[in-house]
Image (cartoon, rainbow, N blue to C red; front, side):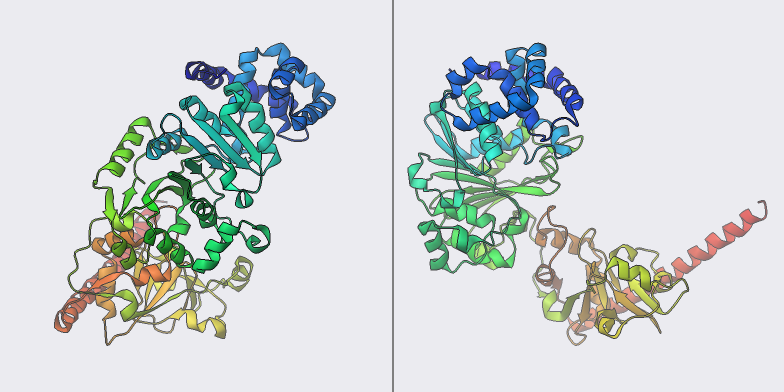
Length: 570
């Protein structure tokens, strides 16, 4: 018998209003006695599944019986305590919601993370879930998404693959509470070696492990279709794209959703795979979501909607569509509708992009690269064509830094991104005892521009450095102008403008990426004017900077005068 949505919501309501405290109080009392945090979940499960119910629901599951034998031996009193304090429905509620308890996850008592409700609801709409659909979920973790899917789609089935034994056991204990076993199945296998032809599905939902590099790919994977896909197209990177290519290697899917981080959507190493997906029409939409939607994950995530025979791709920048809620952001039902409408219809945050436009943008899958307003520059040069760009010195350890700091003011200085502000003064920079010969190449001279790799993207033209040797650290880029092609004052004038900042936002990879790469910065378009006009603007900008410096010095003098006045009465 399938648990009805109304019943499920009543169980969820009790958990939110009372169950969280009950669970937390019991676990606090058990702390120091329970060796394994996950055993707390198994205690509640054993309390619910008495011998009669166990045989009825999970009679053929030897792994569960072995698990419960251990729980009975180690925690019999705790099991009886739960049975004495909670009703069967209350135990159901805790079993179904245990893995959703944020304060348990926040202290890492259990691994993994839950799929936020807003992302699930949006995914169902994008997948166009209909009666009779069969969904497949690789990497199903503790089964929270499976439960949500079964409750919201009682006329659909779901199958899953998971390799972690604890997750398998947890899912097997939750699923009988929700649905008849014929509607849901989970197998313990390595997803990469699963024979997809043995599974019945037409739609896919997956959140591959973020940032995972499968260095053991050649030894681990024996799926002939996946191996052939890699060899035939000379793919090199083995990361989240491998999870996606696994699905594509078997043509039975109609639509698939993958939740991924932004890193794989723009990096040069993955460009060949992105090009393949565009050329073969597999990408239907890319949707950038807000940051901090997952507990414990501060980065923003993206939805890749995969289908077949797509001539164009709908890019949606939904990074600003969310509601703040304490430690995390949430996508509400209204937010889901706004995002889905942007996917269906072109809007200020969405745009259909052609294969040719992807090619012009190095097959970047970052939505804002395409949805931000076009930077209106009829005549321009790329920054990479008029400057030499390099990163500051990134090999300076903190321990070495402290040893080399000078208590006295010296001519050897070090500059970081945090030093760039309206009150910048070379003399106020941190002093070093010495700068080594190998570091000389990372020192700036007059006419160089330093540019912060992230944050507010501040820039500074080095002027009047005199006898100072200024070492640039790894938080900054050093731009050395080819002065036959561009005047440093003209370039700094543009880099400091709001127009430039807007362009940087369109080049940038989104909120999930902290730093801009040299390649991205090199794509910055610099307005091109006649040499006469450039010289005129440069001279005027130099005069403005000179005036700012005079004002800075005058401000310091005025502050000193105020201090002297105060000293007369103290």
